[in-house]
Every structure is written in C-alpha cells, then in structure tokens.
Image (cartoon, rainbow, N blue to C red; front, side, top):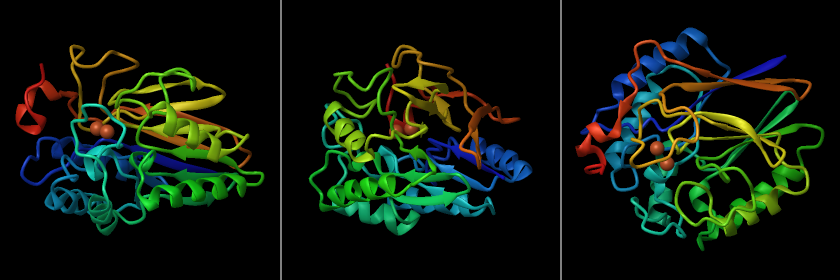
Length: 276
Ligand SMILES: [Fe+2]
Ligand SMILES: [Fe+2]
C-alpha cells in the first residue's frame, strides 16, 4: 500500500487582498483530479493571519471548499514568527495568535500513522519560544519520534531546518536558527527523519541534507524576486506529491498546476509593501 500526500504550501490567502486565490483555485482543481489520501498545507496558509482573524477565516473557508481531507501546520504569516528572528517582517508568535490559529485550523502539532510511516507535523514558529506550549511540543516530538518503532518518520515543518548542513551558524528568518534547530534535532533522537518536508522559501528543492531527504514545497501563490532572495532551487508555483510506501521507501515530485501563474510578489506591493 502507498499513501499519497499532496503537500501544498504558502497559499497566502485573504478576503480583502485576494491576489493569490485564483492560483489556489487552479491548485484545487488539480488536487481534486488527483484525489490524494491527504492534502497537507505546510504553512503561510493565510496572507496575514498573524494580524487578521478574517484572513484565517477566509483561508479556512477556501480549504473547506476543496472537499478533500486537509490538515495544516502554521507558518509565520499565520501565527507570528519565531522570537529569535532578527528584523522579522511578521510579529512574533504569542499565546493569543497561537490560540486564534488553533481555533481556525486545529492542533498546531500532530502525528498520524500510515502503513510503514509516522507523519510528524510541528509548529516551526514555536521553536525557541518561552511559551509553555514550546516545551509541550518538544516533549511531544521526543515521544512521537521515540515511539515510531519500525516506522519511518516524515517530518513536516514550515521552515527548512537549514540550507545545506545542520552545523550552519547563520541567524535569520529563512531557516530555523541554530539554537532551536539543535533542540529539535535532539528531541528527534538518534534516528533522524527519513524525510523533512517544508515550505516557506517559495522555491522547490529536493536533496539530501545530513542524511535526511529534504523536500521544499514551492508556494501555490508567488515567488520572490532574485533581488530579494537567492535562488536555492526552482522559483515556480506548484505543489509536491509524496508517495510513502509501506516498506519505508519514499518518492516525491513537483507538480505544475495547469492554469496557475508564477506570480512575483514584487508586482503586488499592496500585499506586504513594496519589494526593493
Ligand atoms: Fe510564505
Ligand atoms: Fe513563511
């Protein structure tokens, strides 16, 4: 048996700034034609849910309209950013923002077992926070990883753990920062996840990173210009299909969505302000 996950990411949906809704609807048509076992949105579901309850509500309404089984994890635009991000564009996560996200999308960390695999989905923005929930999540990760038994683990997390290596020292907002990354890897234990699937960078990349298969899902919505963000992989909209086989094997591929346009955020200054 093979379990099919369609990982969509960075949908950036909003009622009053609906610039990326048409791409989401094209994506929905492609998903309905494919009928995966699970659709997983790996965060930045909303355009500005960290500040707007209406954006969270609209994003949820649009996902419910897909008429597919969908689960979620939060991104920085849904729940606020990590507290250790210097010069963050989003406000930091706090208890109120987290409660609001959970009200609309359910638990911000969860696991699910399918044949041969344990899916472990976490709230990246909580890592490094002093909120009580951060310690609870860390304990959950340790228990879920240790209890996976013979199953392979697929970790879903909004931000990439690193660019190329877990010993990187860069402090920023694009990847997990070194201290929370160390704690997350420690909680995962000696047997690292076979797959780490993320979003956040709005680029597709698929490769080995410190013994883990690291798959970056692109955004369904838009890319960032090269003046603002280096090219790590492919700057195109789309989504990723993961096939998890019962024997622990895995493959993933990028799906291009018919009719979806690779929009550039520089052409939408009203979304997040002008892009230099
Ligand atoms: Fe995003
Ligand atoms: Fe993000």
